[in-house]
Image 1 (cartoon, rainbow, N blue to C red):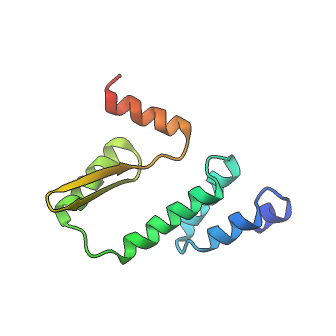
Image 2 (cartoon, rainbow, N blue to C red):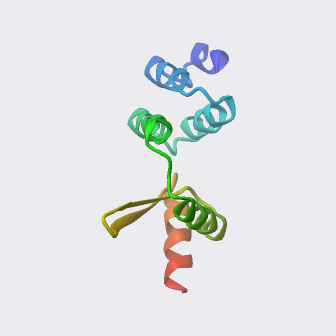
Length: 110
């Protein structure tokens, strides 16, 4: 990361944002996404913020966690299920245009 910063392949904003990620494996994945141009500073900030807020939330219903895992394995991407009062939403994450197209293809059965 330091080399990329020195060489100008990584901006200071990106570097500062990456340092907020505590998990070194996730930090490296985000770093690589930045270098390939698939994520902006804002994208990285949102991803890290969602990870932080996920840790501060109350414990997730084990059934929902199992459904998230099943969807994540089936779709090959991060999935979040939020439920409140019998209603909710499913959020699918993608990190490039190609990943979006792949998700659309899988979900539509084309």
